[in-house]
Each structure stands twice: as structure tokens, then as C-alpha cells.
Amino acid sequence: MRINILAAALAAVVSSPLVAETTAIVAGSVITDPSSEPLGPSVIMVEDGRITSIRPRQGDVEADRVIMLGDKTVLPGLIDLHTHLTGDPGGDFWKEAVEPDEWGVVMGAKNARLTALAGFTTVREAGSAQHTAFSLRRGTAEGKIPGPRILAAGPALAIVGGHGDVSGFKPEVNEVLTSGYTCTGAVECAEKVRRASQNGADVIKITATGGVLSQQGRGLEAHFTDAEMKSIADTAHSLGLKVMAHAHGARGIEAAARAGIDTIEHGTYIDEQAARAMRENGTVLVPTLMAFQGIKERLGKGIYSPVVEDKIRAVSPYAESIIERARKWGVKVAFGTDAGVFDHGENGRELALMRKGGMSDREALASATTGAAEVLGMESEIGKLAPGYSADIIAVDGNPLEDVSVLEDVGFVMVRGQVIE
Image (cartoon, rainbow, N blue to C red):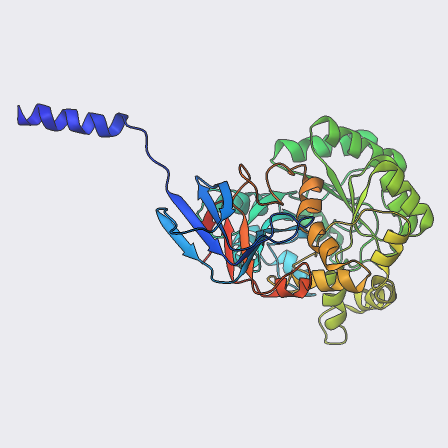
């Protein structure tokens, strides 16, 4: 009889629904959305990784776990639309030949944690070896490693020998090291988009123009033909994927926008004609000002090869006015840094550079929250604090709507309901 009673009790426990743990975050101020004014002392309730309510603090707070943040300001986690988690800054291109892809996962685990601790709860991984960023994406999603939500591109599509392909070695070494994602002609480019989708890409990354850090000194204008870029954009969109295009030269920016590319990364030489094409096609600029800052700080230190140093000096004078030019011509700007070209964890410094480029503190914050969420098509999931949204929450001292630089020192981070220690 005692065994039957015990069995019945165990069966009742197993059949009963598990009660999700509730977490209460108590703070002195809450910014739910960059377009809204801060709330006073408030309580944010979190359950099963999502926000269930936001209410004024009144009386005692009841929850399984209560996090007291004093007078800190709580706001949505930040979003970086251009990161390279699997690498650190440096000019040693030859490491392509000696470091295995698996090392990128090790580096990525380190950098994912640093990025989250800096307040970035979602990132777009803008190019990596075949499975490294995909492994990181799974690791953070399953809670195996601390880090942000990751949307990953995997290897970038490039022209043979262009930025994004391997160069600088003997021909036979270049051939061995190539990613397998170069393409020539509209048909092959469509096939490579489909392959990227098959292998797990969340977004398609292409190198639409030459690049500053590649070992080619042939300028920064368009690489792909118009037909190739249109094939890439049309194929990606047919698969429900967006396309991000590394692009520096004005005519390459214009061609990418007219082809239907969704975002332009860098946009160094954007002019009125290129801006018009972006505006007419709804193409968003991700200016990555910290990338220019990072490479400029490493000039003359033996880090980069002579051909790369020449390109850095050529583009640097234009970097400071990218946002000013884009805004003058009505181009929408969203937040992205190119972290990995500079040290991971310093992503927040981009916000002050955006302000220096003419954006208000509120506009800069919106670019890294609601604006970036819209670019990702995730505006009903992240970028705001509201019931039903993912519990991606950060806390800082001060009011970032008045001084966005306070976001360079984040004191609390929660990603999908889990505190990052």
C-alpha cells in the first residue's frame, strides 16, 4: 500500500504543470522606448524569458527572485547590426593559413560574453568561417555560453580575389583557403545564396565593393555586376532572408541599393546620387564609425601591411562625415560597429560618435534599439520593454536620452531572461 501511495504521489507531481520562475527587476527609472520619457521607480516582471508587466513600484515586491537595481535606469538591451565575434583586431592576414576554424569558436565564446556585458543583447554576425558563428548562435541560444542573441551570416559572398575572398598568398594557397562562397554571374551567385541558406545563414552578407583591410590595393568601388547583385537580392528575398552589403565607393553603394540590398555597411564615400538610390529603395545605412576609429588608432604600429595602411589613410578623412552626409540626403541610419576590427566590448563608443555626427542622444539610442530591431524584422520581439517582448534588459547610471555616453558603462545585463554575470 505504501508503494502505491508513493507511486500515486510521484505521478501527480509529474503530471502537474511546472510553474515558471518569476523575476522582479526593481529600478529607479525605466525607459521602455527611446521615443518615450522615462518612467519613475518601477517593477518589471519577467517570466519564462519574457516581460509580463511593467508597473510603478508600490509596496512590497513579490517574486521568486527580486533584483534590486537602486536608482539605476533600466532600458532595452542594445542591438549591434555589424559584429565579427569570432575574431579580434589585428593585421596578421597570414593567420588564415595557420589557425583552424575551430579557434574562431573559442574566440567567439570570449567575445560573446564581453559583448553582452557591454549591454548588447542582440547582434548580427557579419561574416565568419562556415560554422563558427552558427555554433556560437546555438551556444548562446541554449545557454551553454553567456552572450547575446546572434543572427549569423556565415561566409560572405564575394567575387573571386575580391574583398571577402582570400588573397595575399601564393595562388595554390589562396585556392585552398577560399571559403567556397565566391561567385561569377547571376546564376552562380543565386546558387551561393541558396547554399548559404541551406547551411544556416540568418542573413546574406556580400562584399559589394573593395575593402580597406583586404590585401588588394585596387580601389573601393563596385565588385559585383548589377545583374549579380540583383540576383543575390532577389534570391535572398525569395527565401525570406535580408542582404547586408559591405560597400565603400559611392557607385558601388548606389548599385547595391538599386539591386534591392537591404543595408549598406560602412558607406564611406556616400554621395547624393547614392543616397537617392538608398532612399528610393528603403536601404538603411549602418555606418560602423568605430571600425574607422579602431583602424586609425592602429596606424603606424606595424599591425597592417603597407597596402592596407595606404587605404586606411585614404578613407579616414571621410569617416567623420558619413552620418552627416547620409542624414542631409534623407537616408535612414541604424547602429552597427564592426566590432572585431576594434576590441569587443567597446561597442557602446559608437553612440558618442553618432552624436558627434549630428544625431541627438535620443536618435542615437533609437538607432541601437527600435531602429535596429526594425532592420532585423524583429520589432515585435526586441528593441523595447513591453509585455510579451523578450526580457533583454540593461541598466545604467544616468539618463541616456540626455547623455548617450552613459551606455559605455553598463551595470546590469539580462538576455532572454537570464542575467549575464
